[in-house]
Length: 435
Image (cartoon, rainbow, N blue to C red; front, side):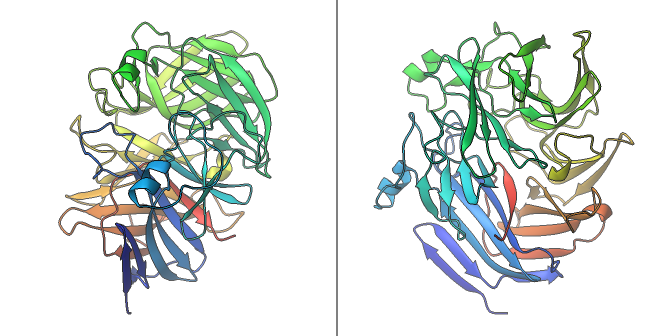
């Protein structure tokens, strides 16, 4: 097979990629991961490098392309001598470097702390910044949750100039239909929320905007504040009043899933003991582990159960099980060192019903990223599908897209796409089905 490689201003396009094994014919779309470029001043804060998206396009058992593209922030456009993107602006940053989703007929790159979404085309190029057709009153958020039944998008947006956070609901057509201000003290960092079939769960935790850091020029001035309480808010989806429940101090970037059983609200989360305190540049000073929080809406009681002691992050499930009881979750086991990157060489499969875990180690010198589950068919079982993830090999400084059979987690990969380049560590990944 011939390989065509083109480069432009540190971006890369590779056509007709080499494949080992056999890619599933049912995978038609692209696997995409986004993150801040780590070569852009490596000593800077983990969250603030210019965003770059890396994707592999699959069709009918073939790997048609790999592309890496800068998100066209105003700063990147100046550096590349390009015209700025059309569309509105909000706040101090337009760095959508954290997440990629599809919603309302658009592919969107998302960022933290009030950044507006950046619309991408089918070749991962930046098209425009958007405000959901004028319906978004301020900025957006990095980690929304989509209800698999209604198709609506739920999130909480924070911005340091607002004296509240905003609970937002975006309809399936991509317009904001609800915006509810939620009173909080200061400006807490709320990377995500949890969603059940009746409620949203808001995480008001001890990481918040630090005016002193902002005054010294920090581009991400959020830090641990020991005097802030830690609490979980339970808000009816269509309500305005939050009921708050106190919990032990901690921080949650990534919930796994949430659901309800009668009066009980059950939320599985990746819990950090502490972040951005001793080390304000990266969230690596404590071991994130899998916990289950149970809130009894009748009695007001809360419980916190650690489900295992593996240091892990980047949880994913079958998205069709969001808001409802589920069985399987997939995470990345973390490196041992406190200053290491987002992940190590091991993927973890959790059987939440059997309370068992299965580990898959890709080997010494390999780093695995967030694994995305794709079902084989619309009505297939919860682990009847594929897991897609990037695996970087330090020995060759190249990356593979590995396709595993989720129901044969420890078995041979279904297929491996060999990318003749390094995909650096990143944040969130997504499977984007072809429209």
